[in-house]
Length: 130
Image (tube, rainbow, N blue to C red):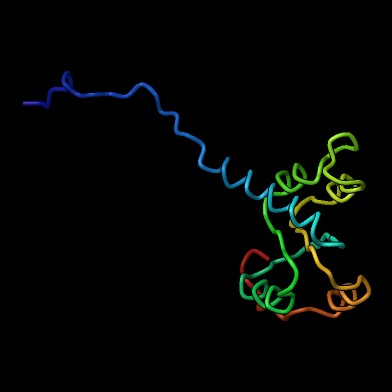
């Protein structure tokens, strides 16, 4: 005989609470704290970045802070327009956050940072799809 379906409890709501909202608000707060505590901010972009390579870069820049996450959330933290920016001029940086980009907050002088990143490259083996 077939199984009866009459006595089953069925929930009508499939909505689940958003778990990422708390993490996104923490990221916004951390970016804003770094914007006030570090004198320089750089926008960097990556192509085919592996975790081990990013780990090596983070190891070299221990006294600095990297943010590599959702571009829209980082834009929201800095401010998208002149009227809602967190500090003066940060909305210009947020316009550059498109694609695989991140933020570097540092105390190091600009010339040294630019020189290091221009010279840094890591050979990578070819992977399918690239």
